[in-house]
Length: 119
Image 1 (cartoon, helix red, strand yellow):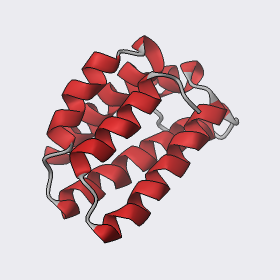
Image 2: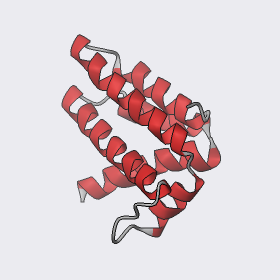
Image 3: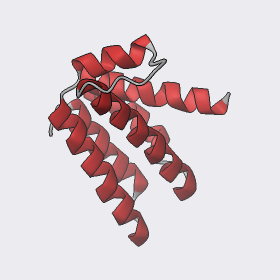
Image 4: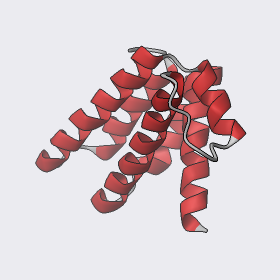
């Protein structure tokens, strides 16, 4: 059940970034992410990265079996260059975690870049 809640939360982040480009909403969501412990933050990044990669795969024509409509809709609205850029951003964040980065600032930066449509 907890995984389903996490996934739904991350889908809402992606919806705010891809569909509505709602920077205020992603910053509100970032408040919760930035307070996570490092292992929970890494788990958050794993799931977000997985979802973004899934959207990218759909955009390039590799639709996994049993893909929910919500994910297919997000993929249809997403830009592959932006998705690729977000995946690179997440990898940079993972690298910076080794030096005790401020998770709140890091998640704010990632979410704002996503909602602003920056690739």
